[in-house]
Length: 287
Image (cartoon, rainbow, N blue to C red):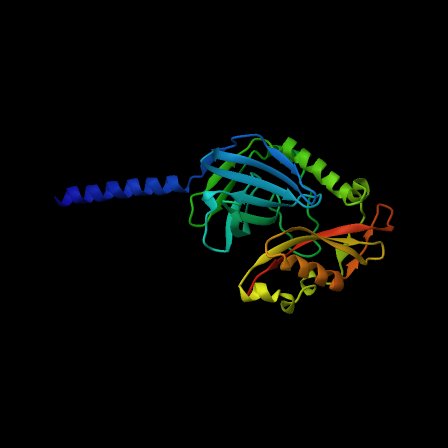
């Protein structure tokens, strides 16, 4: 009896270990439809659906300006969470990196929202670091993304090469800049972009928090664009995306327009030119 019990326990341990190893392997979901490029007036969205129609996962890339960064949204039950904040390890095939996220809803679907993501996961180590360009060859080599969220089984979304979808996103971004009244060719060849003189963190104060939102414990985020004239003055503030309530958007633009100190962009010949600066602010009650 003793030997039989030991054998049974050993077998259970082996089976349990095998099950645990399987749980650590990413679940693979394939794209179930075509990529869709959404030309929003204030942003460019690239999205696709994965898995079964009754339990889909939707992946969305969003760009608010030309460049290599994008916001990444993952929608579906696989990212369900009761916490406001979250994080995940992300791998597009160019290296694994960790990203913080906000958890919430997108319509009836649960969602994770990641800000300022790059395919290669590059992160600035010091203010003077110059980000490398993500090349078309790198984009073409990306065929899926693996997400590992703490406490959940990792999953991989297989979508095929990003070469053509990213080409479409660049075309969309150029049209976006043109719709704002800028020449995309001039903006792409700037010697220096419009940039803050004072730290953006100084543009808003805790006393700016909308009182009604603070009393109710509401959090929010606002993506906005500043138009900067050739003298470095803020010529306009435009909300590109925001969460409810609208108070956050109204307060953000009023305060930033009053306090932001900018240096103007320089064109390819070194002359000051009109340009823009896009950034995002997170409003956290009690943060």
